[in-house]
Image (cartoon, rainbow, N blue to C red):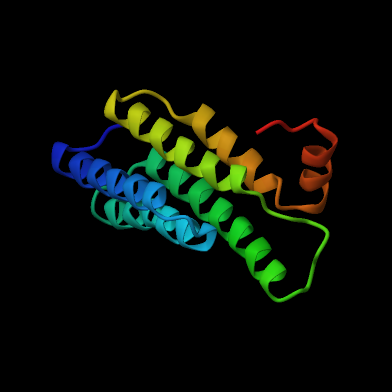
Length: 139
């Protein structure tokens, strides 16, 4: 991904902060809150230095965050007691943030990381939860 050194530093610093904050907090809602910092900084960067890879990254990060957030809210409001979220899903968000950071640092493609994130987001849907429960999706 082509980014100027200053923009890359901002992105890397923010991801490092997010990872640190997520690892220190035991609350899943707060972990998700911190995770949203990544798509937030990506959005700010592509407003300054547009890059199609950043748009792709932002889109997957934001939609995944929204899916997980919606599931959390539904559970919290008692709207759905069947499709659950597990600690492993939030642990995987930390792993994804670390993988993403490594790929960006080395200027490597990160499509594979975004695919993993998409699968985690998919597990918040009815069919995704079913496949997770059945053991077809393995986190």
